[in-house]
Image (tube, rainbow, N blue to C red; front, side, top):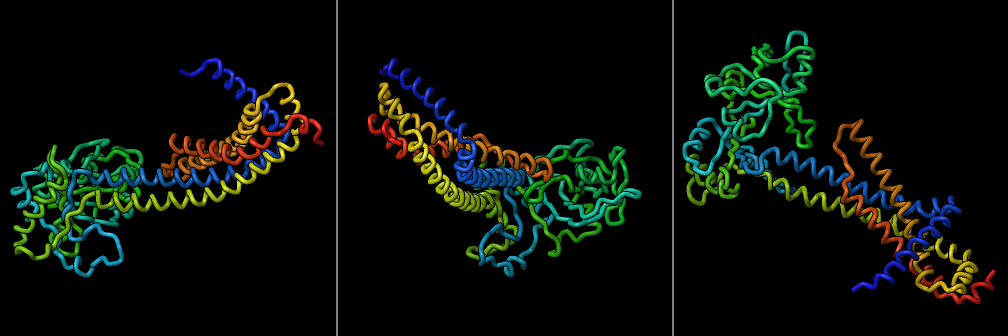
Length: 422
């Protein structure tokens, strides 16, 4: 059981020590500011790097997850990293085709949705005198809506008949809609894509910038059969992929194994023959990204700790000066009955407050920068509660470490000698 009387006695002395320490710090404002500068810089470096890393990691993770955590992607290019990327071999692989899409749809038992996507990049869309330049497009099969999670702010998705019949209908992103139709509704308006008329039937909800470039804001989507009118979708000159979504309760690894077997049969690959396709999934991106962010976080800690180390020596030096200046006061306190631990706590609290002031200024600086970046740049940079707690914990720790020796030496002063000190 905790002795309540002893607890409240210590609590009262901590409060009194805090008041005394705060008064001493206020009396030496310039010295307080200069001594906390190292801590401020150190906390700023650490928390700024951690905030940037956390923000980038979250934004990238959201972008990766928007590709589909339960989706396997069949294409000729594998998502690999490193210097030994065999691009010359992958370049000669055949692209996934509509015929393969149909065969996969028939043979896959673990699929909850399947779609063929063909990239159509850097295309200008026109409506009367308005242009939307460098828009990214994809031509998709009807199953796209079952594989990709998206929302429409207005209009509808194309029907199965429109998809199979190659109707010239299009879904556009919010940025394209704003450029082409600044004052009217885009729905049922005719726009021009590569000189051909397309009817707008839907507008995607605004998503904001994506670090992987897969936002729908500057995207247009047309049926894949329609794209066949002006792009050879089954040729090796385009970038195409088949996206397969796993059924509920089925893991992507299980789905990947089934796809691998079916694709080898479709492409008539002999046992032991190297496969001429890649099966990609979002976990292939997540792992190297986590390693990268771990390295950046470590670098931030190293840089920040050097600054904090300098700041810690500064705090210790100031605390020794403070002890020397108040030696007679300490002697009087001890002669009036102050215990050693009271003096120890008083100077430890003063060191902790010094570091907390520096840490608070560092955290405030980080917060103001994240606010400015979010407002003016549009990047979702944030200061998390976890990083705030980290900043406070580091500040308190440095205060306790750097202030302990000066505080201990103060607590051990002989009251008679201390009073006589000049």
